Image (tube, rainbow, N blue to C red):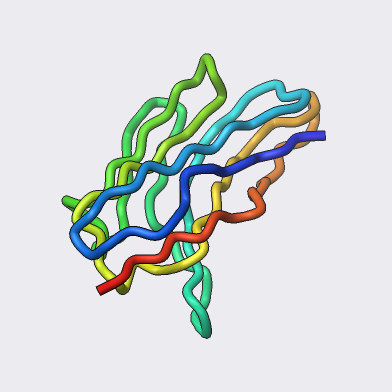
Length: 120
């Protein structure tokens, strides 16, 4: 059973920084693209950033230049460094992974989410 577990959320003042971490555990044949999504109250879940296994990165326009996604394939971890945080970044942040969990199956897995609150 594959699990993704996030950590690092919390309360921070506007302009501050947080670093989110996500670790994948369980039996896996391969981890392909990993990413971070967020969902604010009353809004749909939206993409924040993704990083395929080759290390290229993709960001939502709203976070470009402020957030940095990275991964450590050996540790099966993905990170999101969030700088210059704004109140509108307040949301539950979810880790996402496209994972081959058997020889014949690739599935998308989600973490349970971690709350990020930015005060003005």
